[in-house]
Picture 1: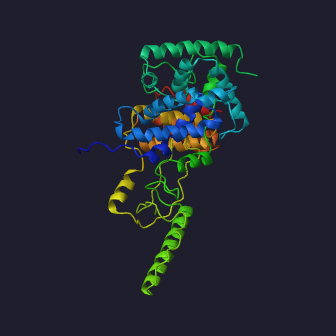
Picture 2: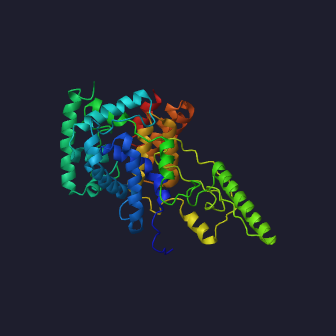
Picture 3: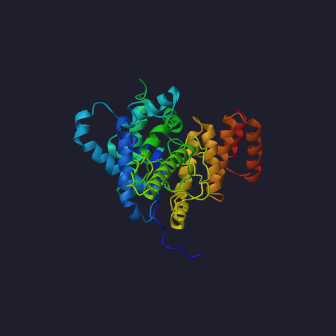
Length: 171
Length: 238
C-alpha cells in the first residue's frame, strides 16, 4: 500500500511521549532542577517550529536531543546562569522527581562520578550508558565522527573506573 | 544492544567495569519530573486550548465540566440577546465567561493516549466519550494525532526495553508495563528473549512467583539454547 508523505508529528503527541526523556536529558546536560521545566518548555517550543521539517531520518529522540543540546547550551551561556550559577551540577538541585531516599542516593552517587567528566565525555556516557543510544546515534547527535565518540567513551570509562575505585562517589 | 558493533555497556553482564560502578549504572533510577510539573508544562505549550485539553484528546471529566459550563454560559448570553432583540431593544451582551470561546476539539470516540516510555503510572487518562462538535476534517486530524508518525526502529525497540530493564529495581510494576508495551509494539522484535527475561524478573520482584516460574519454564521450552537461560534459572532460585 503506497502512502503519501507522512505528516509531521503533532506537538502535543511528541510532548506526551518524550517530555520526560527531554527533561532528563536537560538535567544530564547541566540544567538545574529549578530551571529544568522552563528550559524543557523552550525545547518543545523550538521543536514546534521545526516539526514541519522533521523527515524521520533519525528517531524523534535523537532529533529532540539535538534541540535540547542547543537549548541547554544557550541556557548555560545566558547572563542569568552566569550570575546565579553556584554549585549546581548535573543530577544535583532541588527535589524532584519521583524517587525515595535510597534511589535518590544511588542517583546522586552516579551524578558525582559523572560530574568529574568534561562536558564532551559526560555527554557521550550519558547518551550511551544511560539513555541507551547506539554509538552511531551518539555520534550523530553530538555531531562528531564515530571514532571520536568511541574515543570519548573509552577515555570517560577510564576516568570513571579510577574514580569508582577511589570511592569518589561516596561521601 | 541494537548495534552488535557497540561495546558492552557498563551496566551489562560481562562489563569490565568495577562491580560498584557497574551497579551504579544498573541501579541508578532515572530522574523524572513529577506528573504535576509535566502537566504544568503541557498546559503552557502553544496550541493548548484554554480548557487545557490536548488537541484531539478525549475530554477528562473536569475539562468536560468546564466545557459544559462554557457552552451553557454562551447559550444564556445568546438567548438573552435574542429575547432582547425580539423586544426591539438593543441587546446587551453578557460578558463572556473566561473559558467559553474555545470549544475543545474532541474526537468522536475515546482516545487513549499511549503510555509514554517513561511513564511511572501506565494507567490511561480517565476519558468520557463526547459527541464531536468539530467538523470532520478536525476529527480526522484528531485521530491522526494519537502518536507521532514515526515508524518504530530497532533503536526505539532497544530503548523501550532498556527503560523496562532500568525500572526493574525501583519500579517492577512499571517494568512489567513496559514489557507489555514492548510485546505489543514489537511482537516479532529481535529482542524478544531479552524482553521475556525482564518480564520474568519483574514478576519475581512483584512477588508473583508462580507466574514467574511458569514464564521461566515457558522461556526454557521456547529457547532451550538461549544464553539467557542461566540468568533465568538463577533468578528463579532467589
